[in-house]
Image (cartoon, rainbow, N blue to C red; front, side):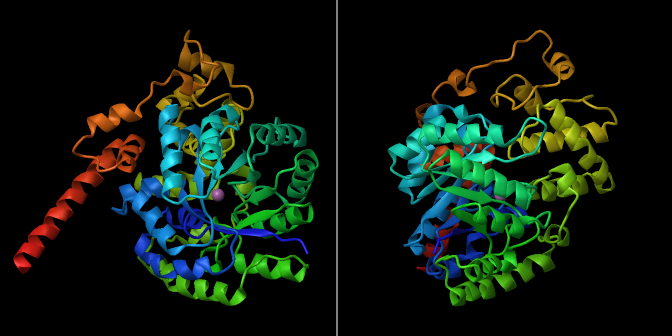
Length: 459
Ligand code: CO
């Protein structure tokens, strides 16, 4: 009986895709031990937007969150999403920072590092991968899945071979937009299984409704594991529901290692949490449904909910359709990058600008400029030469790895933060998000001061 590994994403991707990563630790603390006992292959609980969101919105130390999860999840491997040279941010960091981040994450309890680069330029995951291997943790390399005139089975097989040769322990096909159809998944997994020896995982979203059938066909083609979210936080822009996949896989003769009774306990716990988010407006009904437009626009779940939030904030939600229509144009001009962070934000914001200013590229963001300069890596396809000329003029784009141009930063920042940062983890938080980390440190000091006054008064 073949074992299919199931990763639970409720703490990270489901949280990010459904409620913009606003789930505080206190909302899931009491269920962690139960999740640990369910029989999951791993629990995705950190990385992606969780780090940023902890500091920016939840007044939580992301490192502290990781340690608190690790304290309660004693058996199941913890998994994080790591954006290669971007770590968890939106720009490239120097190599010493990438290494230090991996080392501290492993030290604080991380077991599986899912590494990806938005444009599948694997030079950008090389350093993180090397450090994960050094830390004796599990390194999973991703192929960001997208469809375009330049992406096909042959190009994906080449990527798979490249990742295997780099030394990753497993490979993940990352379909962040939920656009991979069942037959595409079958063909792709089959091709990869014939090309490489390492386990192949598939990650998708239910955005377009394809998710569960895509997983099933992927498994029939030999896929070794899938990502699911417990049903109250499954479906829509999140992952296919854990219980549904578990039920159908067991029926077809696969083993999952999951315990149904425990899954029910987990779901019973999260149901009222979801109800709370629905009534506060944090969980928008829009992201819970099936949105087949994504098959045309290729917009990932997280990106769709962010676009809606941004347009609402600018009183321009009536422009959503126009922005969604603009996205494929911008994508083509940028050489068909997969729409995953930070490319999804870059393409989303530029498309919004093109619509709201009423003229394509009247205003070009700093990020698009950097991308055209080659700072994010090599574009998968050809860039629109007119756009390159308009933005760069006579400036020459770079062809080497952008991080090669960056000076080491960690020790310098540690010195600069003496008296403010209380740990190397604080220094890393600061390097990742300087302003919000500084604000967080300040508030942390103030809340300590409040606690001290309180205890003195009590005495
Ligand atoms: Co995802």
